[in-house]
Length: 632
Image (cartoon, rainbow, N blue to C red):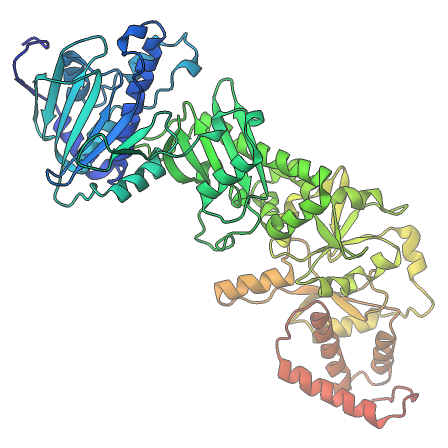
């Protein structure tokens, strides 16, 4: 049978095609509505092909004819028609391309254009199954097409089972008309819904998409309103246009805090338009939050939240990325892991960090506004991607012991005092606890600035930041904190007492609570503090994990005692004069509880603490103010 026979002819699909059609209809797509995206993409593809041919064959289209797509819903007949005046198909092409699943001519067409400029043509379809998504909503599909440069038209018809028919037809111009005979449960004839689907999936196609809104084709409305700003040069776009596009994209009532417009050419070609909102979205810290950029392939919408292209620690970023050759799975709904995905992701991260770098350097006050909203999220990058340390470190901001504002690591380093060997920080639940932390007493006495890390993420994030410009970061609560021998000697005054034997008694009394008791050189005003051993968790992080895991023993920490504090001196006197005194043991437990309270940790047995404290207050109230400590 010849493919150009004028009469109606019936053909069988190639072997296993019906099985593939079943897969397309039942398994390939997660949303039936994507059929419209696929068919509009194919129509745009056909118009691109025609536009390319018009460069050398201008007579293919009558002068003044506008290339366009039209949607025609007919509620009476329950049909939806997708019409275009693109390149069209011959009888042979209808038989070959629609009779063989995944035989789309797009790939072959791209190969023919290997030497052509990509800017001359933008082809969307690469998968060859998009047309068959029509059967998600239709039980019969009729395709009438007339190839550009030909006078004859043909109609392809099939119910998506085993056969299709080809017969002569009439069409007023080149192009293709697809008529979907909708299934009973397919509700795609309402003009509002069609507008919404076009806005969602095909708003940025190059060609006008007309929707028939009346009984005649003359009454139409162009429904794709979006302008693909990312395809234009940044110098050609006004700020107001960026603001309007952001609001259109995100439905935010405020303009964005900042934007970044970029275009990448080379081995991979893609462009993007990224925005940082002014305010944090409500789900920024919720476990089920969704993130990612809106993904387009040649201006056709693919997915809302392309999480593979945006790390979680940049989840506040909104925007679009449009790729020329991004590989997707066959239904265009899942990104395939590839070098192109990694390149795009890397470029997005670079663009966002470059944007923040510029704001931080040129507009520090404005950057502080950003940091107050999204700083906690940005710091997560140190934990999840420590290889980004050198990019993220200059962007970090912390409160510190020098004033009430935010300080960068570069500013801290610039004002380090002579002889200071490290950048010191303390992790606490609040600025108040950080300011009053006993762990920082010796540091502040020496004039060393201390950074206050008070965000929950800091305990994890700082692990990815071991140094800044070759200056180590050191925790004030570190068990092995070394402040240098030259000044440590100055810190020991004549009031220091020998606490070796008292340490043993405290260790024995608190053996269920601490792993070690040692004399401290970091304390000046407080009698004691608790420090985290190497590899241990900060106390508030440990509490959080214990609460999450519903239990678990509290890890033992190291108790440091101050040899110059009068309280320890009095305890030593009590130990010498009456080592068996129960009061001495009560005081030791009060000393431990006091260390817990000073760092913001809860006491294991508040009632016992209150009882011991009451006894102490009763004894103190019975003595004259200047009376020496009585013997046991």
